[in-house]
Amino acid sequence: MSVTRRNLIESGAIGASLLAMGAACSRPDQQASNDLASLDGVETAARIRSGELSAAEAVKAAISRAKRIDRQINAIVTKTFDQARQDAGAAAGPWAGVPTFVKDLDDVTGVSTAFGSRAFPGYKGEEQTPLIDAFLGLGVVSLGKSATPEFGLSATTEPVSSGKTRNPWNTDYSAGGSSGGAAALVASGVVPIAHASDGGGSIRIPASCCGNVGLKVSRGRNPIARPDTVVGPISLSVHGVQTRTVRDTAAVSAALALREGKSGLSPLGLISAPGERRLRIGVTTKGLGGAVPDKQVADATLSVAELCSELGHEVEPVDLPIEDGLDQDFGLYWAAFAHNAVKIWEEATGLPRNGLAFEPFHARAGASFRSGTR
Image 1 (cartoon, rainbow, N blue to C red):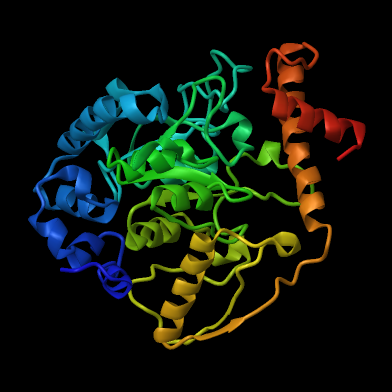
Image 2: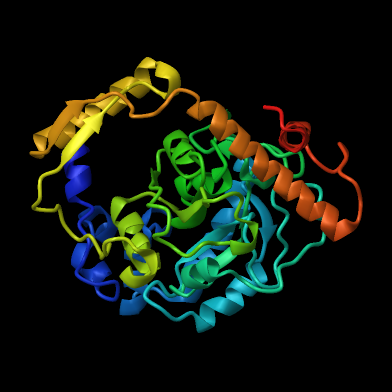
């Protein structure tokens, strides 16, 4: 089957429920494949439920891939392989036994969390957040922590603490950030899905760099991962996953979504087919302040807009409804994150902030916020 934009969309149909989705939407190429690395999360879960594949086998194969492939991509900062083998035997839930990783900004009980930094050696979370509880509650089995830049504040994943994460398509290129480790592990086939988060592009940027599916859902759709670290009047960070298929992203998004009464948003539900309602879609190829992207980026954007139009949606060019100065305001808000991270370290250690514990970029960003400069 030739790969086109349309059949890529059509091949990602989702089953009627999380428990039955695998059997309803297995793709022909997946049904014939014996290579577990080529399966997405939906198909892996379906095979485990049917008994064709055991959770232990799925986890064992993923660990083998991780050991082999991470030598080239450097995307894993903490390995919990022994624990994963144990967890596979007791995995329960709609995605029981599907191997994954958790981004190294979020605590998993008893597992090291470094926040992509040299400043927190030996730290282990004592409890998980509601978001991680919900994610692991799907039955997925975490193999460890994926790499992220210091505090997740950069668009590339190359922290001093663990080194550069490399793009699996070309190891001379960046995997993007801040969910770069997650993106590289998914794109390389180590795992079908990986936990990720996005404040200013941290799911979308690495998905673009690595050829994955990366969706930032609306703020408030999912549980807040670290309520105690929300900076300012809103939480910019939204949690989700890196995947290789639209149906994986749709299934996990539906499973993690808060109930309507808690989120204040319209119900998301499991999207299992194209919607009947036609949408009015605005498209622009200009960024903040009128910046023009590279031609490849503009062409890709217009290609998606063309596809949406072919599907019957109303697509029209628009100017971004953003006031001048938003980019500067965002930079100040971003500096507040760096300041807050350093402040937490100061309180935990009783030491004054210094350039030895933190990378220069984040130390300067935090200092600029503290002093009131931009």
